[in-house]
Every structure is written in structure tokens, then in C-alpha cells.
Image 1 (cartoon, protein in one colour):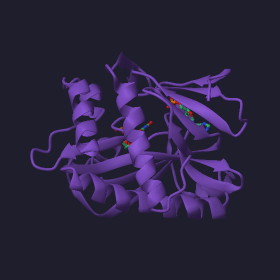
Image 2 (spheres, protein in one colour):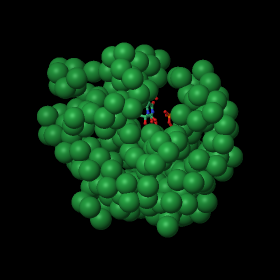
Image 3 (cartoon, rainbow, N blue to C red):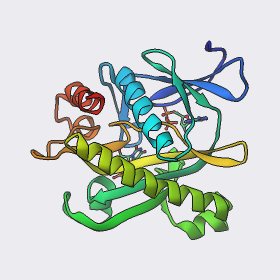
Image 4 (cartoon, protein in one colour):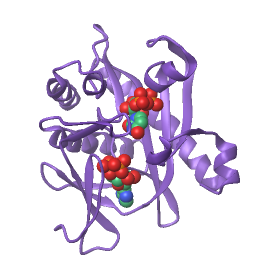
Length: 234
Ligand code: ADP
Ligand code: UDP
């Protein structure tokens, strides 16, 4: 499958049409942004690492019954995916307080939540992806009840499966972001699952092995991404 016209270039990925109107090629770049793209940089080999990690994780989730856009990995940076209409919601799942939740509620990072917290953020960069609830989603017609039901169910399932999976690799899944899309009348998981979109801490040392190393100028960013890949592939 070859790349035809580029239809989108985002902060971390590019999308290309293919000869099949139902399929796109998603190319993973090394570009990294944070704080609504006010901080920009590159993380060497990030694209290659996130492509492989997403392949592994989408494969695992499919096996566990979560439908995803993943078709196959084509090469180092390219992945063949089903073309979806993205539901403009970024779903955040949290197991431990960090980042946005710590700031919003004035809580220390690292507090273990009694149960996972699901948040919807309206996907609109210029509004900084504001936090919304299911009433906003319904009242504004952002998604239907049925779609929201599927999104919630899959998000909790992804959390359960990935918590277990990362734990078996010596990693704590602190929080993550998911995006869903509409494909042939159904909602499926899209975008990527990687250290760009998940917070992962080493189980023993609590060392951060994710994009927070870039956001907070902690150094060894590429090494952290490589370490996650190494453990996940073991
Ligand atoms: P951003 O748009 O936030 O800069 P990216 O650089 O990751 O993010 O760009 C990828 C874009 O592609 C995102 O807007 C995402 O919602 C969208 N997307 C992800 N998977 C699919 C898919 N299967 N079909 C269509 N669009 C997708
Ligand atoms: N996240 C993401 N994209 C975003 C915002 C958040 O992938 O645009 C991920 C982030 O990496 C973290 C989780 O979602 O794993 C929760 O992020 P949070 O709301 O704490 O925001 P942040 O700290 O990134 O501002």
C-alpha cells in the first residue's frame, strides 16, 4: 500500500490517502510539542518507537475485544489504518493524580485514585481542549448516547487491559488519552497509544518514562521511550 495525497499534518503525525478509500497511512514523526504547541522540539526516533508501540498495543487490545483502526504496520514510521471520522472528544483515563488533574484540583502528583477517573475533553486546540462532561456531549450533539456508551465501555476496558499489561513490564500506567472515530456505523479506537499519550512510571523507582521528560526538560527523553519499547517487546 502506497502513500498518495497527504490529507493532514498534525503535531506528531501525518495522514495520507491510499488507493483504498477506507484506508489511510499514518506516519509517525519525531516532532514533539507540549503546552498547546508553545513548546516544540524533536525526540530522536520517537516516530519509529511510537509506531512499534502502537502496533503492539492496538494488537493486544484487538485480541481483548476492543475494535481499533489498526490494520498493519508497513515500515518504521508508517502504519495502515482504517479511515475514521474522529469524534471530537479526547478521553482521559486516570489511575494516579498527575499533570492536568494535579493542577486543576491542587492535588499532589502520585495520589492513587480510589477508582479510575474518566474525563472528556472537547478536542479543540485553540480552546486548549477544555474539560466537558456527558451533558455537554449530549446537549451539543458531539456524540450520540450509543456512541458515548461504547466510548466509555472501551475506555475502561483499555485501562484494565493496559494497566495489567504495563504492570507485567514493570511499568505503572498513571494516565492516558484516547481518541475514537466513526467507521462504518461503529465507534473504534483510533490515533495512537504511546509514551506521547500515556504517563508511565517505573514500578520500583517511580522514574518517569514518558513525554513528561520532554515537557519538564528532564533529559534522557529518547532513552526513556527506548526503554518503554524494550520492555514492551520483551
Ligand atoms: P494533532 O492533530 O493533535 O496535531 P497528530 O499529529 O497526532 O495530532 O495528528 C493525527 C491526527 O489524525 C489527529 O487529529 C487524529 O485525531 C487524527 N486521526 C487519528 N487516527 C485517525 C484515523 N484512523 N482516521 C482519521 N483521522 C485520524
Ligand atoms: N494527553 C495527550 N494529549 C493531550 C493532552 C493529554 O496525549 O492533548 C495525555 C497526557 O500525555 C497524559 C494524559 O493525557 O498521559 C492526561 O493529560 P493531562 O490532562 O494531565 O494533561 P497535560 O498534563 O498533558 O497537560
